[in-house]
Length: 343
Image (tube, rainbow, N blue to C red):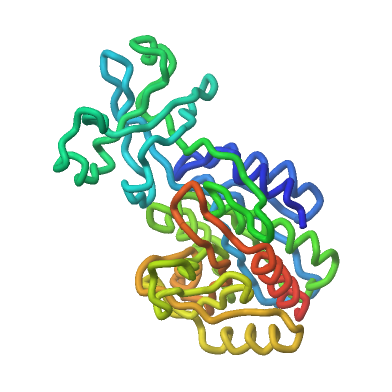
């Protein structure tokens, strides 16, 4: 497993609308894998692998590049930075975080904390409050000189390295750099197989704020089949009822049946399930009551497409400790490669 690539993908900063560094990294990795590569006006990287036959089906893999983060919205006279979120954060996970403030002239280390009193001088009632995201600020240690380095619209990400822990991989951006990893590694594993289909791998922008890049990319490509590749919940941890687990680590890739953005094509669900059974690839059917993913954009583009999601269960999602099981990630790579080889 190419962990070095996954590490570099996860540690490269890129929030919605600021995916260019991730895109550049992907471009450096895909030389020779595709027949045509371009960047669209939304910043999505559109990669096409031509079919060897005429009238071949058009298959689109959608892999979003962005991670949740922040955009700088205000810098006060003392140099404290205030931000607006781009993506869904739970404020309980933002206390005392190390962050990276990414500017046109370089990156600055910073720390994020909420306004208010420290424990030594706070009341019991103060300590019960969970601040809103807008109450957090960033301190770069530069004081008033911060304004000389940071401007409105610069972006901020969490500053945490990828770690390997036994059979687990932990990072602040597995959502959704594992999809970027899969989009590269699946085509690499496919080699010259699968030329019976025209394969598009779209590394999309701005998924975390409404599937925006996927909508425009899918409208342009107009696939026959769309495969949204993403993370999903793995709530197989203490304090959560079994029926809310969604997926469980070590049980294989997630065959995504529905969420609030789309309902997967029944025929594709059957095809993927049958192929996984035939190839001995472990999987689990998944559904989400809320949330969405890029497969929905492919399904609804232009005159529509058959669509499905292939997902990897992730513990502690939308935190700096996102965790996947190595075997589940490998199962996702195997099923996508096996499916594309059927053409």
